[in-house]
Length: 272
Image 1 (cartoon, helix red, strand yellow):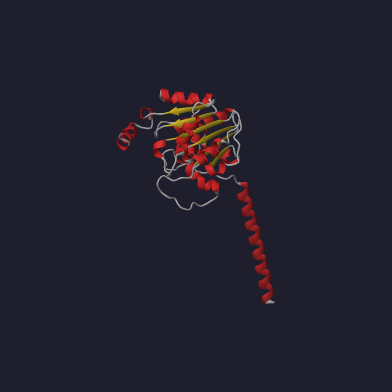
Image 2 (cartoon, helix red, strand yellow):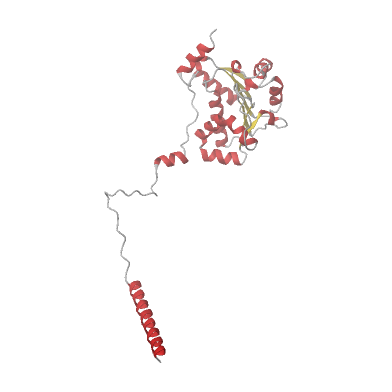
């Protein structure tokens, strides 16, 4: 009997306790929650969701929306030559704006809809050293060669636009050897950079890709060739002189716009 009575009292106690807890929870639910304490204006709390100008600049770089403006009279002649000719050769020392002007004009043509594709190419020749094996696909391996042009396109179009165009084939970077079998049509702007590192055979192969009404720019400095033997750029300049739709533009040391020290350095390296 004692065991039964103890069991009844314990069950009654647990039931009463459950009822009390339930009422306590219900009463807590009915009470409005107190507002969270607002931080003082002088506290050292930082809002991590606030927009940072530095982060926005890093992920959304500003790009130039103004048309390309020449910095020298000779540079303006080069820009006009690209506009008015199918094939333009830009020859001259480093820092004269050959690559920048060509890349900026290509970006403007793509943005305006006058062309549908930009092709950037150059011979895969290192400047006096062997980079060895580069990981990745062909595009990844060749990316190091066209990074200067990517910087130009990022500046003129914006990084997001450039990334989109690269993914969808609107901007193509490929080694010169991969140009064989292609045809450059009227919707294409082609830039061959560092052309002083081509052989005459490579240059012939490239020039015979040109179709009607396309834009082709070939840039290089004959004095800075990194290959042995005949220079394809120098050979081509001699062969194409006087052809219709072809312009050969020569920059001088006085046209260097990169910096004043570059002119002085070239004077020391190329005396005579």
